Amino acid sequence: MTSVIETKDLKKTYRTGAGDLEVLHGVNFTLQVGEFVAIMGPSGSGKSTFMNILGCLDAPTAGSYRLLGEAVKDLSPDQLAYHRNRYIGFVFQGFNLLPRADLLENVALPLLYAKVPGPQRKKKAMELLDRVGLAPWAKHRPNQVSGGQQQRAAIARSLAVNPSLILADEPTGNLDSQTSDEIMKLFIELNDQGLSLIVVTHEPDVAACARRLAKFHDGLLVEDSPVSDRRRP
Ligand code: ADP
Ligand code: MG
Image (cartoon, rainbow, N blue to C red; front, side, top):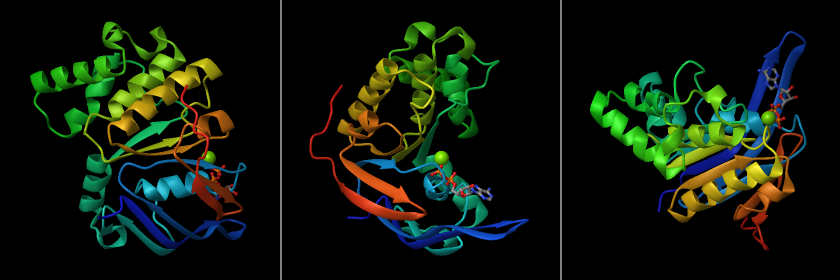
């Protein structure tokens, strides 16, 4: 079966005013369908750089990356955008919702980009909000709901295109531990339904909810093993 993600000897060098800085030194990583991986590691170890490459938001300097079996470097810019929008859902630490749009409109946005007609868009967005327990807040703007609710809306938005993979970079970084648990419960539920997930986190309690833990250090994957005593909040 095709892997969702396969990187081989992946490297990334940033060109800065002060010279070249290699921040990923050769990362080999595979994600199979239905896996749930937590990525941990100190600040500056390359986690976000790696996630940005996985999300096709940035290109590696060397090595290979296959997304659902396709060599990403062989895709045209249009194909790349299509793959990114169609197969990957993004969840960020700061939620990244549009402040002037209500939750329903925020969740419907990827469907607008995908040219889904208005009535269908609204129906699907409402179903997604319902799926994350936010139906009663559909008409609220982000600043009228809690951080946890904003992140739920962002997760609903990430699900709008029925992605194969969710990439979440420190999704609970702005949330208290109880709210973090609610978000992790939701991720576990989505993973139980077959969705593949990668979650970057600094919190051991969050990482313990995954099925597998990968650790970065100084631009290298130094550990990658199953989570033995998985936590289910
Ligand atoms: P993490 O997410 O693990 O904290 P990052 O991937 O954000 O780490 O950063 C890894 C290293 O790359 C850091 O030293 C950071 O300063 C550097 N870096 C990140 N983005 C850029 C950039 N756009 N230009 C130059 N250096 C960068
Ligand atoms: Mg980071």
